[in-house]
Image: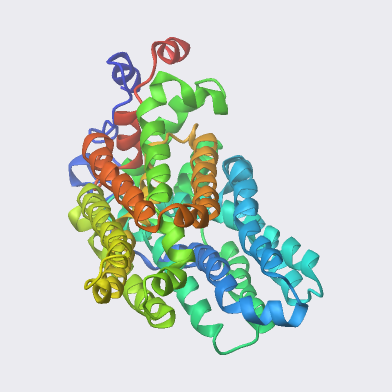
Length: 488
């Protein structure tokens, strides 16, 4: 049956056991719809353990702002030295991203998460006991390496363990926990010393390391590794003891066996025409996400408010108050409205938000309109923050985890994650220079890029709601003639 589908030009997603009796003696007609499962306790526990890594991600992002004055005063750092400490996190994340896919493929999704937490714990402890800038930078770089790994493997693991009707909502918990980690760290930083704050950062790392042995490995990774019995056992644990998994397990096995007959994938294989659409969508979403100005607005929100004549402290607290509820709303709506509608609404909102911030800077030079500048600045940043949290923050990572076939996921994931962190670094580095050139112009550029994002999503991004990973990947990545010949 697989070969018949291949000869038609692509891997379809046939219900390959629908006409066969299942292992429990029931007929195919009595099967539950494949992937249409409910959330079991094992699935929820596995997701919670995985997103501890997302929380670590958030704590690292949120640490530098509240710790700035304490570190600079106690260790006598200059502004340039502290800027290096803050930015080196992104350099470490790029290094982690380069190897993230390969490590996740070699030692499994659980192994990669545990491996990343070793770097994070080592980094946090280096910050806790640092006596000079060198140890601070080493610790921050180490945390960044762990973040680069986690930013890839967490959403991929969650996507691979969840049924299709729950995958979107569960995967966006990754972004929700990043927001929670960042916001809680920001608030704790106003109450405790920077060393204690760094020590608190090790807690979610330890929780994940302790919890990993109690959750199953990704069934799709196990199938890719040829461990069929382990794949079925893991799938049964995730779907519940009474669930009928024969249909879902058979499709995973069938798809994995077909891909294993293909030649070993390398990073260069990604640039074949076969994977063109997946690559354009995956990389394009990450580029547009970063160049839409998110890190400029998040990292420099206080400075933006002050430049526009508004209280930076009040504005930052308002951002935190908007971010978590909107991310939660996006998580709830993900598997109800679908990915595309949320992305379109989110990109349109970020476009409007940046436009309002640009207007606020224009009004500063207009006599009689100056008093409206701070209002537009606050309104624009909050609209941007809320809209970004609704979709553009988390959905690109969800789609990245869905659109690449299992044999390409390691190389593709490394590339997409690297592009994301590289874009983050470019915008973070260039933002102050852009603001010196033209504050209003900078945000009008960001607004234009967000507008381009709306068109990109409308024209190229597929709707993946309610489809199995195999169905999504088969529709986006039809097998080339060379591949067909190699397995026929």
